[in-house]
Amino acid sequence: MGGNSKNSDVLNKDINDIHIPTFYKFIIDSLPVAVMTVNPELNITGFNRWAEEVTGYSAEEVIGRYCGDILHGGMCDTGCPLKTVLTRRSPVVRVETTIRNRWGETIPVRKNIAGLLDDNGKLIGGVEAFQDISELKALEREKANLISMFAHDMKSSLTIIGGYVLRLLKKMRSIDEAKQKKYLEIIKNESGKLELLIDDFLEFSRLQTGRLKLNLAATSLDKELMELLDSYQLEASESGIKLKLLNEEALPVIEADAHKLRRVFTNLLDNALKFSRKKGTITVTTEETAKEVIVKVEDEGIGIPPVELPYIFDAFHRGPGTEGKRGFGLGLAGVKTILKAHGGRVQVHSEPGKGSVFTVFLPKLGESELTSIQKRKSFEDISDAR
Image 1 (cartoon, one colour):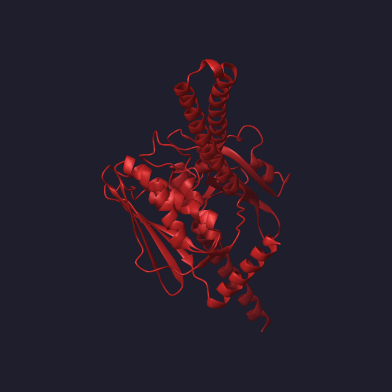
Image 2: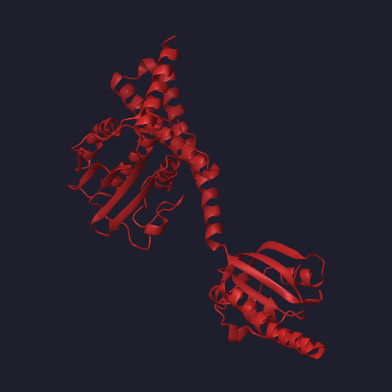
């Protein structure tokens, strides 16, 4: 009996020895990050498909080779993180550094490195997981550039305003009325630019912190949309564009921050005007379902390429066709943030050359919730009157 038990233990151990490496290989190959394993001599023993994709090398090409000859890491010569874990100076190392792919391109990466131990705690190698963070680094550079651009544009407007105000103060009596009016128009225009820049900067700040405070109240979307479209009629007609509002049935009152929702539809209308062709039409359509209020903003503009659609709501994203147009790529990111804070969402459908449709979904209120808001609003109005 004892012999059978011993043989059984040996058999189970042999089975485990066969299956455990297979299981580990399956896990490593399935991870959505680049993973490389090395032996104590830093020769590569494993290289998953994500590592192949990032580096351009196949596993067959790299197995058995010294890892530094493949990755050409920015820390290979000074403070190699794999050597750090293999010499037990640290069990885990996390760093941001660079590697070079097979075509000589430098790629910024974020690495996590740890030692590989056997059942007895003996060090048998190391594992390095790394991610290409090129897009993240590009975004960080873009943010730094944007802050610089904000400061430059604000200073430009303030310098112009200050210059004309100084002229008016010093030479008011010698400047004729027509020229005074011209100066004041310039000051007004530059003030408007400054206000837009400050709005963009505040939007940037809110997106950075992820915080958005809502002042919720009973809100009529019909009223907000009609007022907003009225304010855009002059700008649209000057650009040769027709503005239409199709709202055959009155929408129910919803709980929302009216000011921030105006910002949502202002951004959508600004975009529609920016990318519309002359003699085109921008149509705003409203409807409702059992649970949601829906607003569509449709233009007949240049449209958005399919490859750009997944990124248009990302902060700082500026796709083709935005060259020379005002903005920092924050408008649609702001739209998404504000709607998410309301429990809503936004979708886009676009065809290049035909135009785009942005669809906003906002949750409706139940009758009891609406009554509660209206009572609270009435109480606040009475308190303000006192």
